[in-house]
Image 1 (cartoon, rainbow, N blue to C red):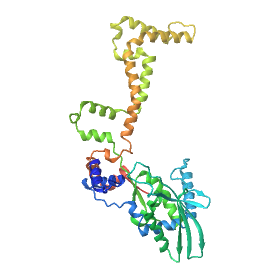
Image 2: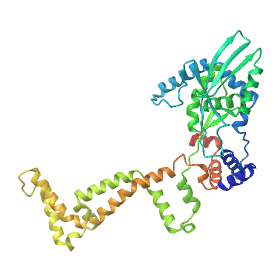
Image 3: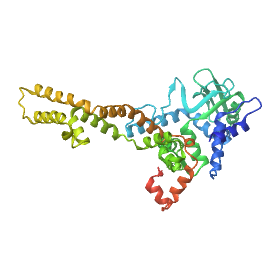
Image 4: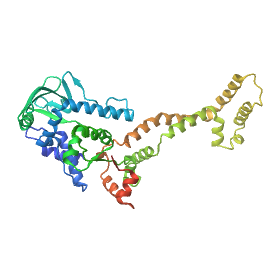
Length: 401
């Protein structure tokens, strides 16, 4: 991916040496997709929000923000109650009120004082709106603000077009207004697409989008689908190497070790260490069944411990019996010291390896970290001995909501 990003960056850099990193990465990804044989059409959100249709869509929400806030929060509360969620940020935070200001599902920032080309972080704020006056059906006045310093009034007189023109003029002042996730997908599903494809995360929050849209617009918006594909990065990497001759021996050994570990091994190691500490005689017998013939002294210690455990040697109480067994174990520990050290070292190292393995095989692993051969691998899976319908049902790639 990165060579494509660098090439795109060189083409997008202006005369002052500035380049929007987000656009460069998107352009690089688009080039990579094209190189893989994919044909996609992309339009930046920054261009979509400057269209008349999106402005009309947004103003319908802003001019009826109080009702949208009520319906939005009601739907979010119902969703949390249905799925027993306690987090106030899932699936999305509720919209808030500040006096007569209503929070809206948009972000706002002043680009004239903040730049993408510097290390300064863009400070976006929730967009608030309040209706300052309403005179009849032909004149509406609303005020937008960021809850801090910026605010601006918009007046609609006799027709909606004047409000649209005022709203579109904001870009010339450096004011950027962008939709949050719910409004973005709501617009895309209503205006831009017949079927909207989500990932797993988007598919969760967009369930409330259906209900909000139905309650606010009084229409059922087109459906969406969830497309998901899980591919283990580590397994795919080992398969793409084909043989250990393709890489350095140490790297190959480390990759193979990572591919073989599992969470149950942690439990097994603890059980094995406990067995070494409490039953060294069993460990020694498993390692060398003929141990007693070669080491009569060790055999005597083992037989004494077995006799104590079986009750053949009288003891005054349980504590005396415990101490006698512990003494036998202590005498046998030197003969299992190597095994104990190996288990302890593995136990100390395993949690870090498990964490690394989970990170590598996480669904969050970026596509750019996979080898380009992943595209051909997916194509092979899609066409190998099954129809697309069978593939969808078997692997649950797409679940219609």
